[in-house]
Length: 72
Image: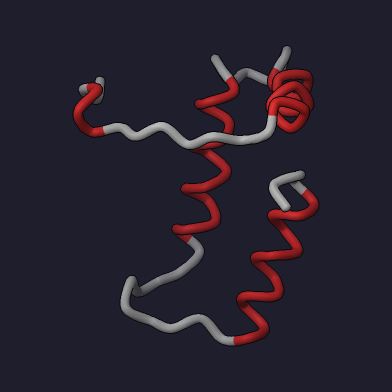
């Protein structure tokens, strides 16, 4: 288990939190935090190299995905 020193707090709007909470219920995720971490890891892991710059198309795709998830 990760220690609290390895974590940070990210603030999201309450309505978005409530929407995610409904999605999480019965989904197998233990919490909204677990779901958000999963989604963010999925997005980040889609990049093969950390130092690569994103193309305009990749940025557009990321923005579209975040919007569809309610983050934007």
